[in-house]
Length: 323
Image (cartoon, rainbow, N blue to C red; front, side):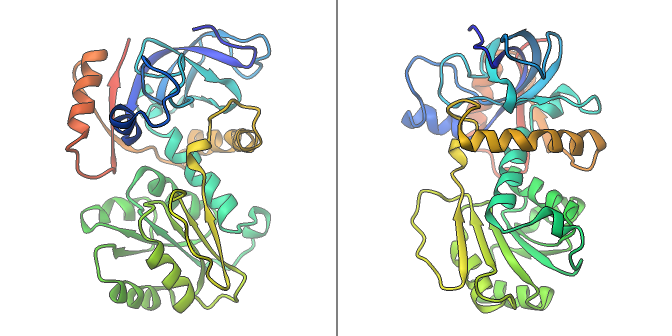
C-alpha cells in the first residue's frame, strides 16, 4: 500500500489479537470490502512517510491502532498503513512485544475518562486526594489503563473485577476492589462501606454494568445532582436519562476511523504526546501478554482459533509477523 500525505507505511513486527477480529470474521461488521487482511493493533518499523509527515522518519519504531476494516490498514500482513498523527513513537523502554499491546486500551481509557467524567486536569492537581472514582471492568485492557490513569490524576480507585484478577488490579494501583459477580445489593453495600459516598464518577469499560453504575450514583454518591457522571463503552444500547446524572456513551468504534482530520481524531491526536511521556517514564505499565510460537499468518490463524475459547481479557495475545 502507498501512504497518503499524512500517513506512514509500516513493516509489521508484531500484531495483537482483539475480540473485534473474530466479530469481523463472523459477521462482516466494520469491514468496508472483502477480501481484506484484518487486524488493528501492532508494532513495527516505519519504511516510508507521506510528504506532510513531520513526526516520523524512516527507521523509527512505531505502534498503534489502524483503521478498522479498511484495505491497506490491516495488521495481519507484512506491511500496513497508519495515520501519522494517531500513531505512537515506541518509547525506548518498551519492547516491540509490549508496544503491540497497549494502543486501543490506552487511548480509549484516557479519552473516555477525560471527555465522559467531567474531569478538569488543571483543577484535578489540587483536588482532595480522598475523592474516589469507580471503575467497572478493571481487569480488561481499557480497565487496566483506566486504573493507572485515575491514580496519576490523584483519585482513589474502587475497581470492579473478578476475584481471580484481584491481585493484578491491586498491582496497578486500585485502593479498593469489589467482586463484580456479587448481587447488586451487596455491591452497593460495599461501595458505601469503602467510599463513604465520596465519589461522583463511574466508568464502565465492561459495557455491561449500567444498572450497577446508575444505582451507585443515584443511591450512594454524596455529590450534588448535576455533578454526577456515568461513562460507558456501551454505545449500542439506549440508556434512559436519569435525573442528576450526566451519561456519556463513548463512540469507541469511531476513534481512529475516517482519517486523522475528523474532529474526534484531532482531539485524540492532541493527547498522544502526553501518553507517550507516561509510557516512556514508566508511569503507565503495558499489559501482560502471551506470544504464539508460530510466526506469520499461520500463527495468526492459530491465535484467532484459540481466542474463541480464551477466558478473560487481562492478558493480550500477540503474534510475530516478521523479524
